[in-house]
Length: 260
Image (cartoon, rainbow, N blue to C red; front, side, top):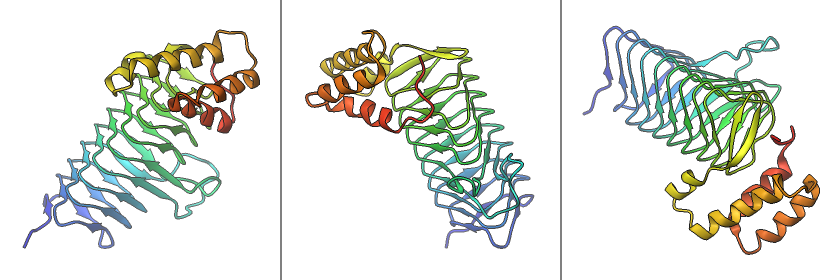
C-alpha cells in the first residue's frame, strides 16, 4: 500500500483530499476543501487554501500562496474556487487567488503551463494551456490568457483584458487593451510589433500559414482599414487559411478593444 509522502512538519486539514502519491514538503499548510490529484509535488513553505482543486503531476515550488481569498473589497467570504489542471510548473513566491461571485466565481489555470517566480494571478482569471508567464508577470482580475501565450518578465495586464493564443509580450509591457492572437506586443502602453513568427515556427506552423498570418496582421494594422473592414477581409482569408479563424473569433469577443 502506498503512503502519503508528507513531511512531519506539514499541516494538512482534515477535510483536504490528497492522492496517495502526492508529496508535501516541510512547513507547508494544506487548508480545508483542498483536493490534490496524483503525482503532484508541493515543496516546503507553501500555503494552499480552499476551495481549491489541483490536478495531476504539478510541481509547486516553495513559498507560493495558492487559493487565498481574492484581493477585492467586495469579497464577503463567499465559497469561490481556484482550479489548476495538470503538468504545471509553478515556481517560487507565486500568488493565485480564488474567484468572486461578481464574475465566474472561479480562477482557472489549465495544463502544461510554465509559471515563473513571483507571478500573480488575480481573481476570476482564466489561463489556458501551454502558456509561459515569466518572472513577476501580474494579471489583474478577470483576465483571460489563451493557449501558447508568452508573457515576458514584469508584464502587467489590466483587468478584463484578453491575451490571444500565440501572443508574446516583451519584458516590462503594460497591457490596457486586448492583444489579438499571433501578435508581438511591447511597451507602456503595449503596442503591436508584428507577429510572433519564431514562436509559430517552433510550434509547427507551415511557412505558408505564417505568410497568411502576416497578411492578416497587415489587414488589421497596416492597410488603413477600419476594424469592421479588417474583420471582413479576415473572414475571407480564413476560408483558405483556417488559422485565421483564431483572429476572427477573438475579434468577435473582444470587449476592451485591441492594442493599437
